[in-house]
Length: 180
Ligand SMILES: [Zn+2]
Image 1 (tube, helix red, strand yellow):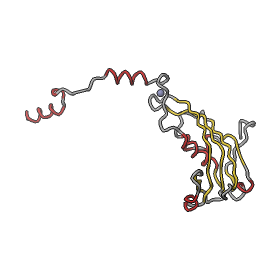
Image 2 (cartoon, helix red, strand yellow; image 1 turned 90 degrees about the vertical axis):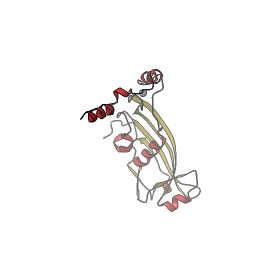
Image 3 (cartoon, helix red, strand yellow; image 1 turned 60 degrees about the horizontal axis):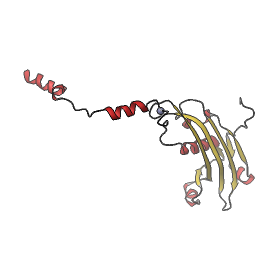
Image 4 (cartoon, protein in one colour; image 1 turned 90 degrees about the horizontal axis):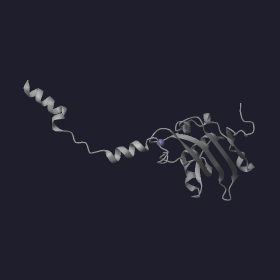
């Protein structure tokens, strides 16, 4: 199925009963088809998403998930709609919890990842981490943006628009009514 045999396949899910005690890890590229929420934000399908994750029981007994996520992708510029390159890289510091009560007890340096199932879907976790790291506003820099010239031009040249009384369509309607 994979076109790139050199890249290790990222597992679809892990077994939460085993990986922490076994101190398992996994790394590789995650196909965009498995990241539907992230895909909605993209300008095109030219995206590479990678993750490496380690699972262990932490010193305080938490089921810790640590590692990195990275993404190279393109999103539409919020000014001109042409694609903008984005490189995202973030560290993962999560702990698996089964309910809100467990989440509330976590040390502040760990974010809870709620999963009461045996199978933890990894793409979902990676997707969420990348979405959290995406900038809120994505725009080209001023010199690269297609719309930049138009915008600054409009802003500096534009005079405030004040409609003339005679051109007011309601005034015309009023006049028509009166002539009835
Ligand atoms: Zn732009």
